[in-house]
Length: 164
Image (cartoon, rainbow, N blue to C red; front, side):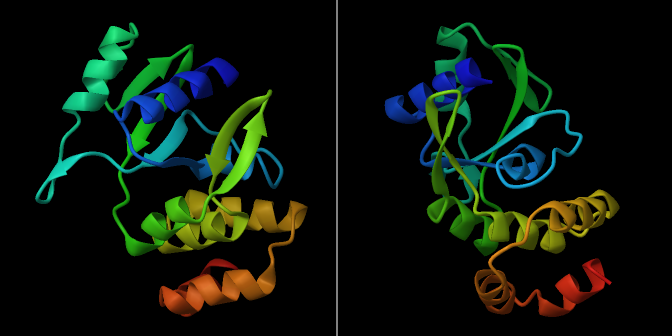
């Protein structure tokens, strides 16, 4: 994954994507026990015209590097990567407040643990409920930070149902 992150960092440096951060199950790996996942979720700001996201610069840069999209993913150095624009204010905030991390010496950004938990609650899928339970069993969030995020994004009731 270090080579994959190197390519993603280059995409950001070139302007093909804006600021990015790792989310999803791979993001959880930085804080809690591993969860089964198929791909690397890269949440990033992408160029857009009005409300339409323009994937042209991203795909053009990837093609020059020898990578082509396959469905909703692009396999980069053997890792399926999904590039996702922020679709909610919570995800937008999570990108903006992502923490600097390192993977095998490669710098990257990862959603805060508390944002990952809140996003899973907001998404509300059965697999997210299971991942929340598993994550909380292996690592405690900063409760005041999590509560603040949940309050500001109107997720306190949703969270209560997810952890019940």
